[in-house]
Image (cartoon, rainbow, N blue to C red):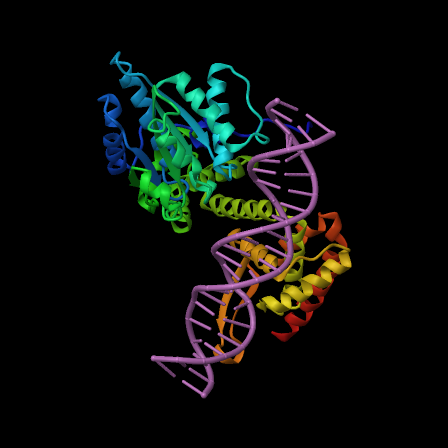
Length: 416
DNA sequence: AATCCACAGGAACGGCGGGCTC
DNA sequence: GAGCCCGCCGTTCCTGTGGATT
């Protein structure tokens, strides 16, 4: 018998469950789409168009709505021969500054024309902006510039100052740039520098998280297409919707959950997808996300995590930061690694809190002991140790912690 | 109401690695 | 190769915070 055999298929067509799938109609976002349409209307009317900013958490339909609106806009603009209109789309997922966004824009524009890409470092910022203006000028007309996940640029917002003013500053003459900014962070606008805030005339559209009913309505047509008839138990889609609504209100999460459940069912050679598969899928996805988060930490981050794992193994949690720091320094000594300042360790801890790896408790005992934080792992100790064990440098330490954890587990059992 | 503890976390800065132009 | 530029990771210095205590 071979290693690979054809599995029983629950999927008829997995595409509707893919991240890149574009549904032909968008559900549960009528109000937002209407607002969006009004904001883009001036392009068809050849009137000056405001910049548009979409705010909402991941998976609330911002990107998909934008693709939808722009493709309609493109089609409808073709009806009028006096409209010169084009779009550029940049995902700022890994771009942490205006500089990098400008380079990504240049490369995207050149891609469309078959030109050479430019390197992501080396040029001065002004130089990159000049190149960008050149490319825009060459394009001409109204250019809709979509900056997806723009909140990644943080405080480095020069590009939001430069682009809208490129025309009045005389850098470009034949182009009308319209910025469509998509942000996962509601506070992004507040954190912009004052000069940008003042000059960035814009329309804002908010995309609230979906509730369970809306998620169900989004999932149903996709599920119909994705799976063979009769494969889905009746409660599967509602359960996916409920899980996702409870956690994030994200359609992406709900869809991934449904797909993962399908894949689990398929690899178990089951001919139906059950609630149980959904629960397993939920666990699986959560686990993956945490592992990825831990893997991406630096050596310093791992050392901090290791110190916390040590306290966790002794059941001496939550632990206040000064004790944790002390242990962290010992670990670094033992590893023959440099240790960093307390301030820096606080940053690492705050990062890990963002990733959902640890829990922070704020303590305040006033005059007696002041204000401080206490920390504990938010994930099973075993998961942390598994990652540390696979990191050569931490292998030995992880083994030691493992055995102290085992001992404490014994005595912990006898206590109850 | 004012004070005070013990940190939290913002701001500014610096050195290093890597890649650019000329 | 000199002279730039940027991002990343770290440091130092400092102001902010909020409940128990006075």
